[in-house]
Structure formats: C-alpha cells, structure tokens
Length: 382
Ligand code: SAH
Ligand code: SF4
Image (tube, rainbow, N blue to C red; front, side):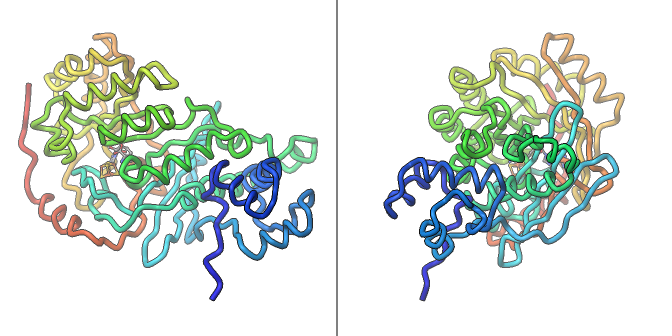
C-alpha cells in the first residue's frame, strides 16, 4: 500500500527544507518549491518548470498540493465572498473574504466546530468534531487567493503585474469557526506560512489570532509567533462572562487581562483588540459600559463592538443601534478607541458568529447548548 501523500500546504519552511534535503535537494530548491505552491498557486508539479525533471517526478509520486474541497461558494451583493469546504466525515468549515477600499481580509476557520460553547455563537452551539490540520488551515487561504486572482482584471496581470506579487488578500483573521489557541501547533505552523516571504509574506500586524481567552496559550504565542491579538471579552465582570464564555470559569478576567499585558510586551502592535458582542438587555447597559472602562483601563487596547448576529434558536437579540451608539460613546469619552463592526455579507450569512458549516458533534456539547438555550441569562450589573 502507498503511504498517504504529503500535502505540501501544511509544511512550513523548515519542514519543507527537511523533506527536500532527504532527497538530496538544497535549501534553495525548497524555497523555489514554496514559491510555486503558495505564490503562484500551482498544484501541478509538472508545471513547475524551473525544477529539475527528477525532482518533479519525485514530488508527483509522493506529494500533493491540496486545499479542502469546496462544497459551495457564495457572493454577497456587497462583494463579500464565502466558501464552504468539506473536511471529511460529514464536517464542513467556512471562510469569508471581505473586500474593503484599502484592504482585503480573509477570515478563516481553525477547527471543525468548537468546544468552548459560547452562548451567542452558532459554531459553539453545534459542538466539536476535530482540529483542522495546518494544510486545511492554509488551504483556505490558498484556495481563496486562487479564486480571487481568477477575478482580477486579466489586463492588469498581462500588463506585467506578476501573480506572485499580487496582494489580493492583505489581512488574515482567525475569526471563523473554532478556537485557534485550542489547536495550537497547526495554527502556529499555518501562521508561520502566512508570514513567510516565500509563501504569503504578510506582516505580523496583518495576521490576527482571535481567542476567547486561553491564557497559557496566549503566553506561548507571544514567544513562538507573536501576531496581532484579538480577545473576545463580551462581559465586564466574571459573573456575566461565566455565563457567556464558559472558558471564563477556568481563566477569569483578572488572569486574562494580566495575560494581555504580558502579550503586549512582544506583540507587533501596541494594543490588544477587545471584541464585545452587543446583546440586547444582557451586556449592553450604561453600567456595563462604565464597568468595562474600569476593567480594561490597565491594558493598552482598542474596543471593537460587534452587533450580535442572530442565528436560529439563539434566543438572543441584537442591541438596538441607539444603544450601541450610547455604549460606544461612554467608552470613547473615557478615552478608549472604540469602533462598531460593520456587518458584511448579510445576504449570505457571512457575518461573525454565523459561520455554521456542518459539524458532526463528537462531544455532548450540542445537547448541553440546546439545554442552555432555555435558561435565561441572569442579569448581572455593576
Ligand atoms: N474562537 C475565537 C475566534 C472565532 S469567533 C473567539 O471566540 O475569539 C470570532 C468572533 O466572533 C469572536 O469575537 C466571537 O465572540 C464573535 N461572535 C461569535 N458569535 C457571534 C455572533 N452570533 N454575533 C456576533 N459576533 C459573534
Ligand atoms: Fe468557540 Fe469563539 Fe464561538 Fe466561543 S465565540 S464558541 S470560542 S468559536
């Protein structure tokens, strides 16, 4: 029986150099190969014309360049695009591309499902199946870039702009399905490839890991591969956060904020982005805003308010626009840079927290979540 082919999408530079070295190839061969794979989006080894014929034959025999299979793709009227990828055994994950005037952001998934079980998150309600491999994480970027390049004005490319130099995706955020810091090694391998000049060449400031607050892994990330960090806060006190983000019981706010301060010593940006989903009557009062100001004051941060994106049976509502405005004003008046996230891709359910994919739950989380939906959130105020 043939061993499984090696998917080159999941190998960072040292791993690829080692593989090529085993076949007697020099490190620069690995770099050439890496450019073909990630920059020129080539999956057929025979097309890699500046590689020696023997080397190409060896690659064809033992390796593949394979992104997860696309099940569906959708395009919103505002230009947002969404892909649903098959990751086997009935599981599917989603990625979303958000074009803006000055940048193009790809939001990718890190797990099939998620076992953190946040009360307001569609992924959380579905339970957890498995971690994605580094190749599946990078594969989302590889595929999206491939598709977006197809759309580019061909005259632009024929006018001499090289595919390898074209930055259709300028930013990557790990804000799709899953908790990236609970799938640490594959996520770090994938991030290294995003940063690698021979692969995607993004700067550390343009790759963001979003976490619900896995404190020990935030410390590890700061040492292994510090990139921009977003932390999902959602509540200004432990009693409320315990109900919204169950991981808070393990890593309460004081520990989380201390970890943010430690992270900042190594971070590529001089602030942490705090995300705060605006839930009507749950965490959106003036008192909550004042409490939040007191909580985050010690950390150099920006606050990103996310209007809640409803999904069937969440049992929760989005705060009214006027409430979000007042809440935001209280934070701004206290000197905290605050933005309200624009909802994009509404017509294709591509907004934060709506990425549902398809998860064959292997935990009992989806049952527990179904039960929780019937329990009202206790009001907790300052
Ligand atoms: N697990 C990571 C990253 C994925 S979620 C995390 O929790 O940070 C990305 C962001 O979307 C998080 O801030 C999350 O709280 C937010 N989110 C989840 N469900 C949402 C919903 N229904 N409406 C708005 N934002 C949501
Ligand atoms: Fe998981 Fe993030 Fe959703 Fe919470 S918000 S359930 S951590 S994906």
